[in-house]
Every structure is written in C-alpha cells, then in structure tokens.
Image (cartoon, rainbow, N blue to C red; front, side, top):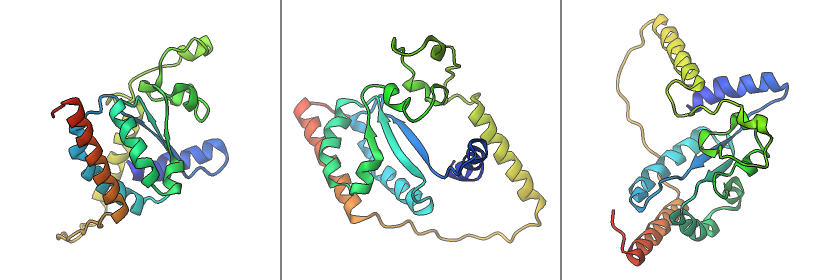
Length: 199
C-alpha cells in the first residue's frame, strides 16, 4: 500500500494540484475496539516501527474517529509519554469527526465511516457517492489491483533472477515504545478488572 501511495497516488496528486504533495493523512476508525484487541498491540507496534523506518514522515496527521471509552481512557495515559512530534500528529476527534475532517478534505474524500448526516451541511453533499471504501469493488482497490498486475507482468518480462533465501532482522522496538505498550496493557488490565470484563 505504501509503495502504491508513494509511486502512484502522491505523484498523481502532485500533478493534479500543480504543487508537490508528499504526505498524506490517515483516518483510523476505532469502532468496535475491545479490550481483547490488546493482543494485537505488540504486532501493531512492530508494523508501525517498520513503516516509520521505511517511509519516514509520510503521514502528516493521524485522525482517530469513533473512539470508544476504552481508547479514550488509554489515550489520556499514553499521550504524555509520547514525543511532542508524535503528539502533534495524532488528533482524536469527537464522534465520526466529519466536521473537523471537512477542514482538511472534501466530502468525496471522507471515508464512509465518517459520513454521518449533518443538518449544517449543504444538501448537495449528500448527493455525492458514499460507497464503502473497504469494498473490493471500490475504485481505489480496482486501481491498486491493476497496478499490482502491471508490476507483475513487468517483472515476468525481466530475465529470471537467481532465487535464494535471506534473513530479515526485525528492528528492536524503541524502549520508549515498549514502555508505552506496557502502560497501555496495564491500563487495559485495570479497566478490565474494574468493570469485571473478560475477553
């Protein structure tokens, strides 16, 4: 996905806008987040570390929407532990975040989970196609699939490369990230105990 973003989407946006566009925003939907998702935290930390090492400073802002109480409680604990640069990049929005997101993108660019009816918006906003961006039939996924096919055909046309195996060493997580993950885990366990919840 990041390669497609960097090689296709951002250059196309640069060309369309007539100015350099080298970063993006990410909208994270927390609908359905449960305490049992804690098990994924370590994997998420490793993935984000690899992402940041390979694609540094490509994400301008993370907008987090549809935030349940569990996330809000943990965010209050974790936020002070983050570096200032990271804190500035993360925006936790109320509800679906549509009002704030419309300040940085047009309605057609909003993910489907951010499109709630709002009486303050002009009626023509509702006329815009509101298809599910997660659908395999969404135009983005079709374009991505086409791009991957083109790359595969191109790679097949190149003379065979000697195949072998190699070992990839995953980077060690930053000690600060490990402390943050441990703090989140501790807070989840406290919430779980207080509310009598189980996985």
